[in-house]
Image (cartoon, rainbow, N blue to C red; front, side):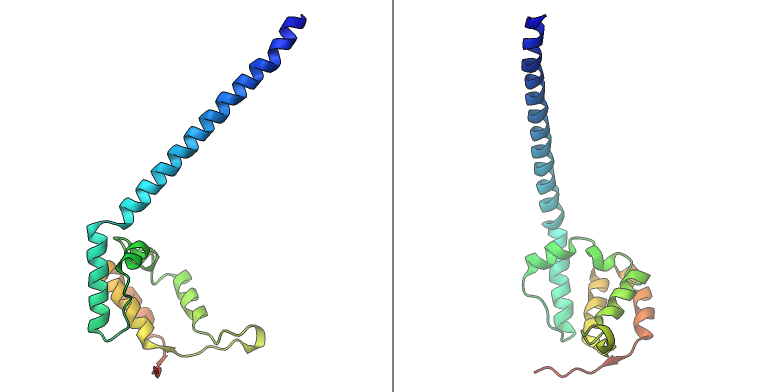
Length: 152
């Protein structure tokens, strides 16, 4: 009976070793897959073409355009990313309205009139990446008031 009891801890240790090796291999496989999918999605020629088109559209409207095409490609991808995910939805409206405040907290929180350039830039993104969402966004925008902001 003592020989069985002495072999049991060694067998358990061997079992745990293979479990840890299996988990490590699975984790490495998931990491490699994640990196491959991330690079594949954001670095496509279509995503770069759309990023270049967005920069050209912004410049044609006289708006400040980002200069780093890689950053636009990573952020918006081929489909516009978060910008095109329900741009006229309640959550995006609430976020946009929340950003149009003085930045103070509590009683100092006041709505402000935002520059129309911000709205024009988002409309340009929608025009390039998801033109089917533009009409709903325009309905929301037409109900807002915007101010002329002086740039220095």
